[in-house]
Image (cartoon, rainbow, N blue to C red; front, side, top):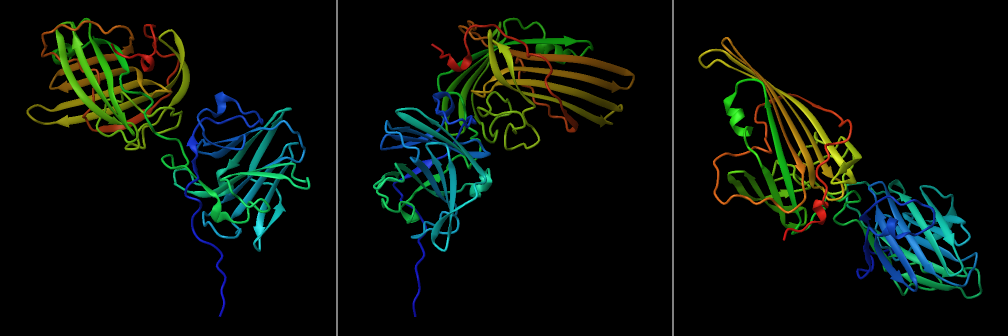
Amino acid sequence: MSFMVVGVRGHNPAYEVVALYGSTPAIDGSISVSEWSDAASVSFNNTEVFVKQDGINLYIGFNNSDDQFHDDDIIVVAIDVDHDGSLTPQADDVGLGVYRNGTVGEANVTGGTWGFREVSGWTAEVNSALDVWQVEFNITYSKVNVVAGVEKTMGVVFVRYRGLNASSPEMLSWPPGMEPSDPMGNPSTWGAITSAGYNWTRARLPGVAAGQFVHYEVYAVWNGGNDTELESWVGNQPNSGINVTVLSVANTTVTYQEVTYNSTGIVRDSTQDVDVETGSYSYEYLFIAANLTAGDIIYTRDNNTWINETAIASYLGQQLETNHLSTIANHSSISFIGLPYYFSATTSEDRCWHRQSGMLLEMKFEFQTNRFSGMDVLVGHFVLGAVVALSTPPVIPEFPSFLILPLFMVATLPPVIVYRRKCIGAPHAGPSPIPAWQTTQS
């Protein structure tokens, strides 16, 4: 009886690269700092390799220092798609090659032997000069059986040949130590490529850091009706504001201090947490994940609330990239305690966040009510907003107040219908010193 061992599971554990989430590069063969600064990198023999993903494609860039030009210099990326780490090449292994003259080629394995096949599912471009040449790869997820949101590890080897068709070509590789005559012949010696912590998609991480500070100025208007309770909340409250200081950031959780005050003193001083991935612990929406874009859900706890629009808006005298959420909700209830009582309300909210940091820039809250109790009809219109004002925090009186300014109101009535709308026009522009995400409270 005889049998053949075709492989073992795993790769060289000392060599692993994580495909970070990053911006989508232009695949033109030119490695620029602005496009690849958000990528992971590994280096070998005057070659630097950059790796990242954007939730749709895998991107790999090579920057090769080489003052000896050969048309047949070549870069090869070989991937063990199933991560089986076999001792010999298997049918799931794929090799993607780019020559210095721009020619591309693809190879797969049949019967344990590499052979060329038609190029599909990826593109690459080359930029070559006298002393350097660069390559950019765009590899679709379907090419390597990656599903966005599902963690996957693959084997990988980066190979660089200098003068492939010369009598004795120089072979360089990551991981190092590949067999010069057959560097792709033993996948169990390759390194690994993962997207650990990102799951091959956008990372939902905070964009703020401990010590960063923002001051919100509060304004409120009560129009119509004779609801003295609501008027007492918002009327006659000059110099109202909220100071927010980031205390710490740990993984996806931001811990912050929130101080609410008016002319009579501090009305609330609290320390709170928010998980920018799930939205747990807080309903204030002060912080969301950084670098979200239109169509992304705001928190994973609620798949029905998403960014309506990503746009450039004017804040603090600057043109900033912002994320907008705009909602309209209708509520109603009927009570028969004593006289029949009918209540209906419409609330609309507009929130804008700085896309890069995920910090709230502005919130507008509009509340309209119609109440019918016997023969009484009350109609109210309530507007509450916050505008970023980044300067030295106002001096807060030392004595406290029992009046609480409800900047972040949470509707507790049962929602009947919820609509979402797109923000139209530029958001309200606040005062203009410097951005909150660059300001540290002294």
